[in-house]
Length: 271
Length: 310
Image (cartoon, rainbow over all chains, first blue to last red; front, side):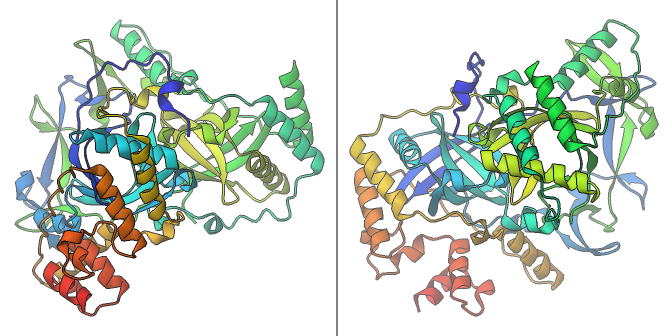
């Protein structure tokens, strides 16, 4: 596994993280008290909705269409629709009953080879930091790193239980929530029939050369979110009162001769 | 087969493979609607202008951004003008070693399937599958879906091209500020902990794990429909840290080797099943499920322990 920290030199590391959950990871009879931090954050430019006419903030209000009145959150219940407009009604507390009773404990019941978990199963990542009994934290981290294994357990967060994989990442313990097997689309569900479309050896050879010529080391910081930059630039221009040009779309070209296109691509790379 | 969310072409050098994109993850959660408690009518979300206290139509809404305290208003058309122009192409920029891309960068998975069944399309698709599968590489590229440009990694999974949208480097938080205090463990301790991990090692098989939350929620809805009382379980208490790590590790390894639960304690000493008291109701329920104990759904924690001891 690559090291996130090493791959991102110069990244500001002075921000103080705020934990979102306290609990205990156990393996065997060893209990490791941890704090959890979110590992990722979206930097997509977020706007708030305003009324075009007066620039005033838009409020979302709960509305009962039958009585035509605003409704307080406390005056709502949860409805599971069994047929059109027919609901099984649950109080918010009753929904919580499904959370189970694991509370703030994540038992690592078994350990698998970390690299064997296809990343398609990874959903959200958290960093686990040490809280107290810190020697136990360092020990679990060292053992996970040494063995290259990930511990599998169940984690309860906001009244919902998740399957998690716990592995060593850099100097910390990372906790990934996992998708369940039936939540991931299998290859055979796609009914791909590629049998009759066997590429010719020459095409495979040229494609391999093209892949080789485009081979790079993965350096995450060499990819910037250009769309985010463009939106921020637009906001800047608009803020200075500039006129915004509205552009049209462009259709891509379609290649029809596979070998000729590969050959032309290779030629282009060599130049 | 899932629904296509996007169609266009995967562009690789000068080769264009017409593809359709669909989600590789499906939502199997039970979803609820918000209802008005009194009359069980479905709640609507309505937009109101905070100044006029009047309802506002969708067309009258713009996007506002706080630029250093100054409100900048941007319209849909203006946002559309900065969308990248090549909106129908996934442009592969580079190939990287798949093992070098830590999964923390992966966001949402999609599958790419050939669009149409022309021989040329299928052959180009298969060519890419074969070459990438053999070399264990991922292709990195960009594409635009709806209004956003994404960085994406394309790789092979189960004979198909899997596209995963990626987080940008500054969307992955640094690990440095996370507290990792404590003394560096002695080699003997690490070896013992690794031995425990090996004792609990198994092959990764996603089919071994079911979504118990989904199943419990299904039971809650079902009980409610049958007008049964819903019991909210009491969460188990957090265990205290152990004073002697080495001793805890040795005991756990011994437990596993003797076929006992790794967490059973010798002091408990009320027979071989002493560890049952340590388990949560859900864990007990799962064991009861394995042993097909009748009437388990309605059993309390104590009843489950008793049934499992029989």
